[in-house]
Length: 189
Ligand SMILES: O=c1[nH]c(NC[C@H](O)[C@H](O)[C@H](O)CO)c([N+](=O)[O-])c(=O)[nH]1
Image (spheres, rainbow, N blue to C red):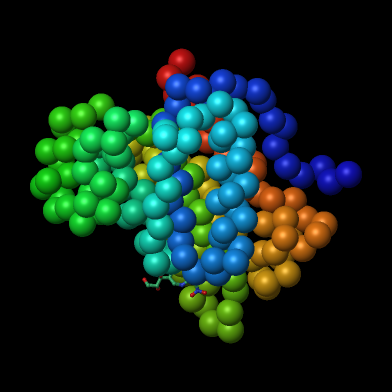
């Protein structure tokens, strides 16, 4: 029994709106991670219509993609009105600023998902450091929890194990989903 891993708490996610922003690099690992996070959100009572999933090219883009999702405030609401997520990502900063002032914050937490796999160069180190600092800054600047769902691994085997697709590992996406519910509920307390 590993000593690692979070001690989970039970929380009612039925009133929460959660975003998931994922990179598209290493998508065979990204997909189960996102699925694991979403499954735990639904299991905690988060309505499917209150889960917004968007993507960006790679992990480097996660901080700005998460920040824009916050400033976009308006999301495809449950009524289906409002600009689409694609429209919002294409909108200018001034448009987003006006949107943000016009609507309440739309998210209780956002999960940022990426898979960084060490290569032969220092590229991995620079991206990993910048993305972790960037996501931390976005959550502190916005006071909205950003769950760190970026795997920083040394090889494909480590990535597969942490997505639970090697037959013996644990899907870390599930932990991120539970963290998003807990932090989203506590943010409202
Ligand atoms: O999400 C990742 N992006 C990666 N690079 C792309 C980067 O995130 C940006 O998308 C790109 O540099 C363009 O800005 C990776 N590697 O280079 O190895 C990686 O492993 N994972």
